[in-house]
Amino acid sequence: MAVLALLGVLALVVGGCACVVWAERGGPRWVRGVATVTLAAGELLRRSEKNRRRGLNRTTDDGD
Image (cartoon, rainbow, N blue to C red; front, side, top):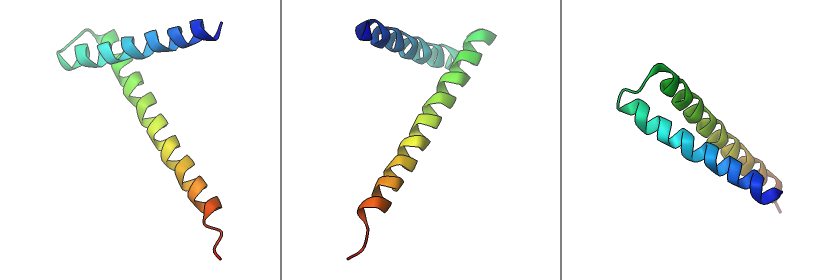
């Protein structure tokens, strides 16, 4: 079951990346919408990773 979920996520990621490329080349409106959502999701993941790393740095730097 987990493999199917991972395959589904992989298909969404690949499809989103394809829409980003297609939108750059002037695709239809729905492709530009999917590309916008894909880029926004990527930005959210990037920011959450930065925040997570900052939180880890605070907990490991207790100061001796």
